[in-house]
Length: 127
Image 1 (tube, rainbow, N blue to C red):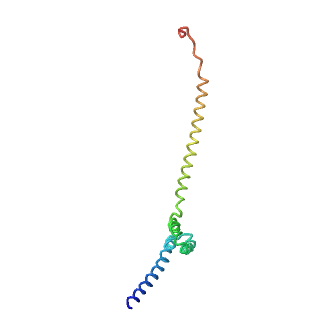
Image 2 (tube, rainbow, N blue to C red; image 1 turned 30 degrees about the vertical axis):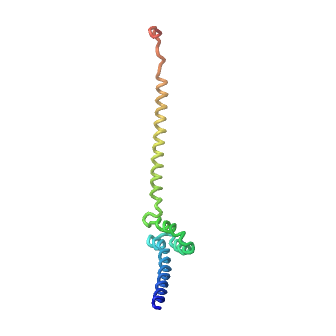
Image 3 (cartoon, rainbow, N blue to C red; image 1 turned 120 degrees about the vertical axis):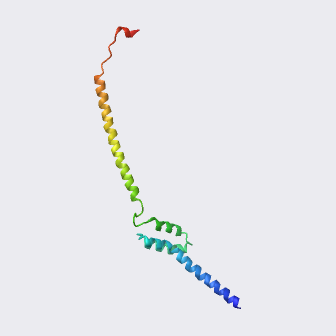
């Protein structure tokens, strides 16, 4: 009889432990977002509760969503945008330089064509 009650107690303990364990696990993305001052903390928290009803199918996406934001750099795209702006500026400078060099080459070609005189033909060249 004692073993029956002991087994029932262990079964209840395991059920309660699993219940609270699952709730604690589903809350990890929210805790991450809270620690990082994520702008979508509430949405992550609500989506975590919704993921309980979908057997945690949303949970990996919530983890990714919560870890993408960092307070010091935001979403992390500003550095990429700055690099793209620098590259765009450099491309503009290079295209202006190419245009300038093209103009110089065309001017030199025009000068060279005006300065060229037709070669004098001498009698010895016809052989």
